[in-house]
Amino acid sequence: MARNVTQEDDTQKAKDQFIKILNRSEMFYNKQDIPKNESSPAAHKLCSSIHGAKTFCPVRWNAMQNWFAHAREVSSKQTLKGLVSLLLAKLKW
Image (cartoon, rainbow, N blue to C red; front, top):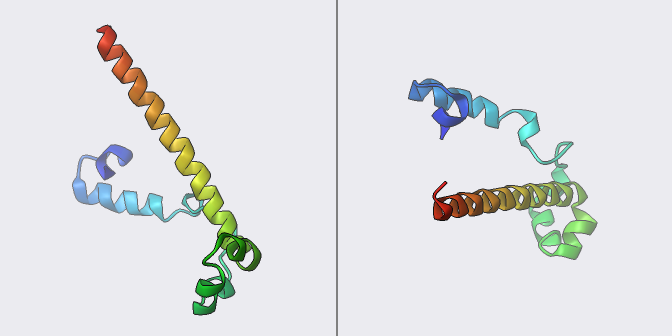
């Protein structure tokens, strides 16, 4: 995967470049750092339900919602791509 994403033939260089890509700030789903009070053991208890997460961990909740939206988008694109490929294969274009 790293070689495909980076277009680098050398596996180690590709892995190093891929890690740099993954660590870029735009790869995270939160616009600000998640506060410590949303990452503490107490937050784990308070934020373990939808209501608790929305109420007591809004930054983490928004980051999760951004991730869910992205996952749905990627999933729908992969599904569409798969359907088009299947259709073209069946039609033998």
